[in-house]
Image 1 (tube, rainbow, N blue to C red):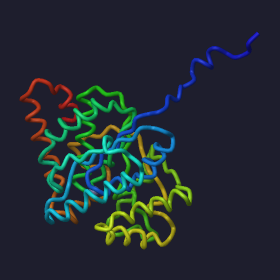
Image 2: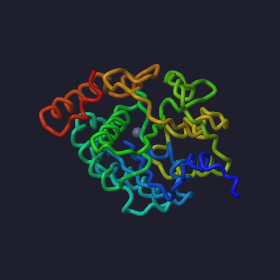
Image 3: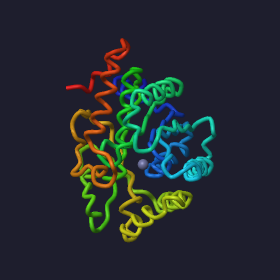
Image 4: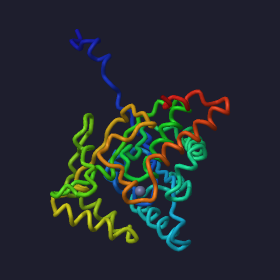
Length: 280
Ligand SMILES: [Zn+2]
């Protein structure tokens, strides 16, 4: 007689591979903050897709092309085919003024890909384009009724140094509930640093971060991810500071206004019952 308990076996969660994992980021280099996870999916034979919402037009055509080329080189290094990554090309720093269009674009892409998992920048008040990419993806997923599991990963509040990287003081994220902290192996950490080497146009801030972490791997040696908590985007992100108010020419009010305009437009069209989810 078979001793296996049929009730126990009923509870087994089948691990169906390959999975489809979509990474939505804002700028060309944001993907490196989560490249260890991208690579992990690839080594597990999952299908990986990457989407960038923004591109930098401010410093001229040549700089824009450089930024795009750096990300394409990384995709080549990771052996992600051209048919699995895409640049939406909204202007860096003002994506919050195009929420409706970005949500529409992401809706089409997510419907086509039908991902099992989606990774987005954490709602952390670090860069207004990151928070916008986060919001637009969450909104597109709701619009579609997609069952994809959403995970967020920090960039700004994931930085940690022996000094706490003052004055950012955004270190709450790694300490908050539900955060998975995966310490990278030596090999993985070196791979991440190798990836950073591709992004020559961003070497100044990145090398500074690596130096500040004083060889302790605090900044890029740990991979933080968290299953998306329920946020109210009409309220400030749960971080100690809104970095973009300090370092960029934008404010949380701009972000909120972007959402409000989108919701007002959405209210005008009939398809967006879901759009009001985040309204108070
Ligand atoms: Zn960025």
